[in-house]
Each structure stands twice: as C-alpha cells, then as structure tokens.
Length: 474
Image 1 (cartoon, rainbow, N blue to C red):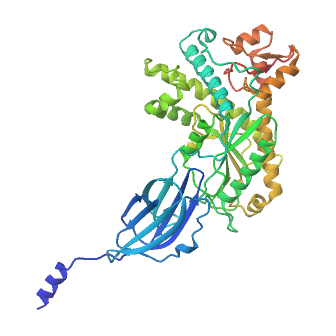
Image 2: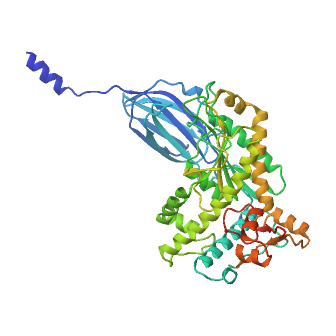
Image 3: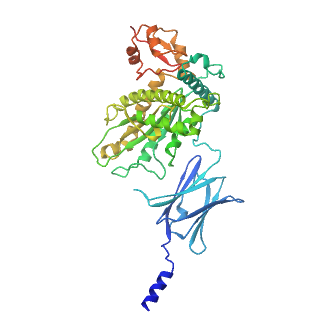
C-alpha cells in the first residue's frame, strides 16, 4: 500500500507556486514608456498588440495580481487605462488601453540589490525624439558640415596629404551661421535605477536630475550656448543611448552628473573623470568591429567620407586621431571644471581622473563625468540636497566649460564670430588654418612649442582648424 502511494505521488505533476505581481511601476519618457512588473518569482509572458481600439496585451502564465493598478500614475505615458483579468483559470491578463501607436518589447530581469524578479515592458514611440527640445535643423546642418570638414581633414592627415586640398565642399551659410555651442547634459541613473542612496534616504537620481536642470538653465541663459538634456524626468536611459542621443543632437560637449558613494561614510569631495587611455584604445577596437558604428562615425554625415575602400590600419589611425583630440579636449575642460569645483567643495582628487566609463565613450565628443560629492557622506548628502549648493556647483561646472569654448570656439559658432569681430587683427592671437601644425605656428611666431602649449592649456600637439591660439610674447 505504501508503495502504491509513493508511485501515485510520483505520477502527480508538481506545480510550482504561482508568481504574484507585487507592484507595478511606470516611467514616462519623451520617446517611450517603461512598465515594470515586480514579481515574487519568474513568470513567462506573452506580449502583443491589438487594433481598433489600440491595446497592448500582456499575458503572464500561472500568475496572480497582488498590486493595485488604480494607483499607477499614467500621466505622460501612452497608456490611458489599465485593465486586468484572469485567463485560463491560472494566468493573469493585463490590457493597456493606448492613446498612440507603440512598438513594444519586453524582457525579464534577475534580482539585484534593490529589486526582485521583474518583467519589463517598453512601449517605444515610432519617430519620436528622445529629447523634448531637439536642436534646430539649420543648426544641426551647420554642425554636420563642421564635422564633415574635420573628418575629411583627419583622413588627409592620416594619408599624409595636404588637408586644404581635400576639404569637402560644404554650403557656406551667409551671413556667418553664428550657431549655438551645444552642451549635452546627462543626469545619471533614473527610473527604476535610483543610483546610490544616502544615509538619510536621498537618491542619487533625484539630486543629479535637479542639478542637470539647473545646469541646463545656466547654459540656455548664456548667449551662444544651448543645452540638450539627455533625460529631463524620472526615467532610465541606457548608457550607450546617452552618448548616442548626444551625437544625434550634434553636441559639442557631453557632461554626465553623478553623486559618488562608498561603503564607508568617511570619503568625501568632488571628482572629475575623463575617458582613460586604455578605455579609448579598447573603444577604438569596438568601433572598428561594429559596422554600423564605423559607417556612422567615419562615413560622415553625407556619405562622402566613406572609408570602406581603406584598410583596417587606416581606419584605426583615423579613429585614434579622433579619440586623441577628443580626449585632449576632455582633459583640458576637466581641469578648468575641477579648478572651479575646488572653490565650492573639497576635492576627492586634485587632478582629473581617467576611467573607462561607458557613458564617456563617444569617440568624437569631448566628455566628462562629474561626481558632485559623496552621497554616502552625511555632510555631503545634506549639501547635495541644498539648492544653493547645487546652483554654485553647476555654476562651477559651466564656468569651466564656458571658459574653454570662449578660448576655443567652433568655427561656425556665435562665439567664434564675436571673437573675430573684436579681434581687430591683434597680433597676439592666431586662427588655425588647414595644414597648420603646432610646431610650424610656434616657429612662425618665434615662440617655443612648450610655451605655446602652456599659454593655450594644450596637453599635446593636436589642434583644429578654426581654433584660435593665444600667442605669448617671446
């Protein structure tokens, strides 16, 4: 009898405990919405759309709902209503009524320090920009022309030819374009990623978003500058997507704001990071390995600069030239920013540090990551919440960025035009022409190369056409 009972038990299928949906969280961004299901255990899901009216259906197998969907804030999203029901006795069906067309995708996540099992459903909006206020198409075109010129000249240098003879013909706007210098402002973390949390519960994603808004207001209030916010609300943007948005918006500079943390409350101070040399080298290899990146970066904005017929060595040289120039600009601007930040807060390190942060790895945009303070330090956590401290810190950050571009304005920018108008042929400045090298400029003005570098805060010999050098008196 005991043997039959054991056999019967083995024949009865084992049913795992049903997963419960303990909570739902919704994050609305300009180009998508993200709905997150917090689950007690893994659950399989099927997601599909229906028309007339527009709906998105999410079927979770062997699951039950333990969350109140009526508490979900739908504002700013494509979801107008959420309905739920039981399907096939054991499955959960969630129906999202939609106000616009979406392209859905979904994936599951394993537990981490903050959350357990999750089902993530992204509702992407076809054709929408990731930023609410993208740059003007005319400004974008002018910036594209500048990029095209720089890339053609880089190709010429790599092949040992005179850059002036291969500069592509571009439309010359009349009068002077006087475009704005575009600064991409990135608030770290966001949405379901809170970043670090301070002893009093302050979340990194909240304080850096507030500082990003302050920095953007400072930039937009300054003639000749325009801010593009990578995120302007509480939603998450992927690390690669952040630099991709900056490139799509033709940014001249990218700054990512963060608040540091450590497992001890003692560390304190602000820091500035640029991409490391090893990070730049590895990133060059990655860009060369990815066809879509290579064609996007080297192929140029109009397809006229394609290097598909060139070998890998030349492609590598071009990328190295680009990365070197970008990194030099990053370090120069970082030094200016760090100097001003040191007047507002203690510095964790007295020099610009270098690391392989993914968010800094755009080969053609100078980039910095700014750690505004240690949120894990109780004193600095209080400062990071203080509006006055936030404002002064962002004034320091923008002050360093602005000082660099006032000395080295892009050729088509308003700052370049203003500088040309006020220069009056002064003999202590020189605007770099195609084919110039730093050593030739130094010899022409009877100034040592090292002194010329020091006067212009250059970390190497990389110079750019249109850049204005200050010529020190010999």
